Image 1 (cartoon, one colour):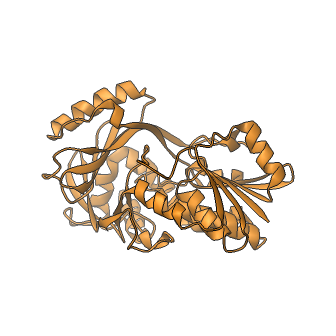
Image 2 (cartoon, one colour):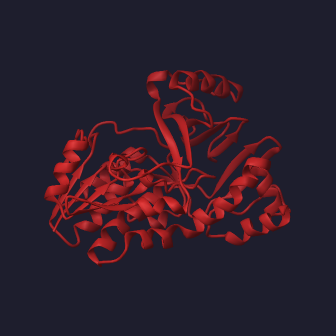
Image 3 (spheres, helix red, strand yellow):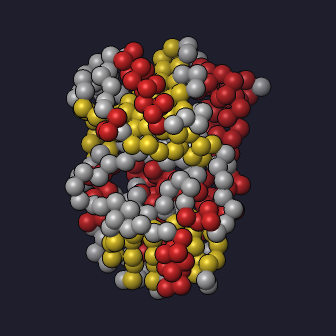
Length: 345
């Protein structure tokens, strides 16, 4: 059995790791490289790290982060983060790739539509983990409910007044996140609910960072990206056939990130493994993804209209009487969200 994986982030690496257990014919294509300084447009915090198939004593694992701070229009809310971890994602992915003993890794690979078709003729399973707006959008209907342009990067500055808690700051049309790696370094990012160009986002980021006493980075230190998310209906497009090859779409490509919090790396890793396991076991990949993401998509789908009305900090106040300490809004504690919804209604 030949498994070809296009995209070497969390979804692709998790897929390759599991595929090695059932076949020695695994190819992983990544548009970047696993040497040198691997960076991109991403945040570097996850929760539920136990769902990532790596231990905690690996390069790129920085530290635990059990709480985060959300700053909204009505003040500050402290959020409990279950099994939260701050990563140096580039270092973690380089280590992860180095553990793949049976996988042929092709770096600096520009896989276009023609190459993707060729891979489908040579593979039994082809996994599209190419991120937002993937190659598969040329072969199957795929769109996103939410698509927010972002600008992010890991920068050096004085973060001592913010360290150690990661935080998200909400503005009318923006969300700014800061994930301190240390008092002197952090991942910062700015997302926008409007379709703004990178140059416009950079000007806005400079102003917002200056307001919280952080020296803005040089434009060259930042990477452009897009945060995407979908509801459950998107899962119907996660699998299709191409030249008698089964194609599974995984990770951000299928929009699995939580639209309220933006957390997607754990969902990506889970989907990469599900893409392989369902094929090997002859099960429905769509059904497996549906089961894995039901709570995340259902609850955030219910809460999204309320979120647009009163904000995440408003939901926090509804969910708990104590504004200074809130429980997580991920589906591990659905009762908190459902309680907030009932109160609001």
